[in-house]
Length: 130
Image (cartoon, rainbow, N blue to C red):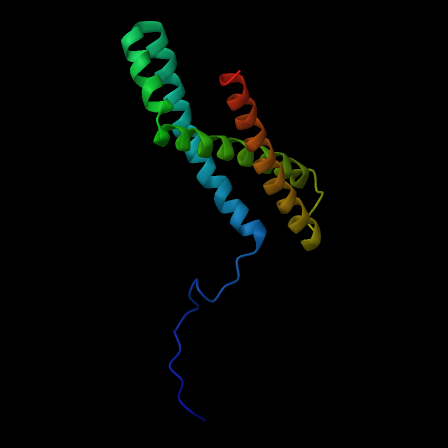
């Protein structure tokens, strides 16, 4: 038998990431992103209450291309965290643990996330250009 050099322990490149695992990791990441976004929202509220120039600066930053990208990703994170949280509520009640059901619910979480994110930004774009 040939001596084949193999790693001593499995590496991440060997594993197939199930959808449930990927969404679980994204759920944690979006939780952190939502906390950062909440701090920014507080900064906006403080700027509105304190100084018009400070508010205009924050509005200018968020209206820039980078700011809009951040807000779009924050919207995706908000909806992903929301829908995955609802999925977890069903799991807490004891429903949806079959492999096929977890895959289907994960796909629905992603579909709902992107559909509502695009809908929110479509409405925002329509309202600002009317």
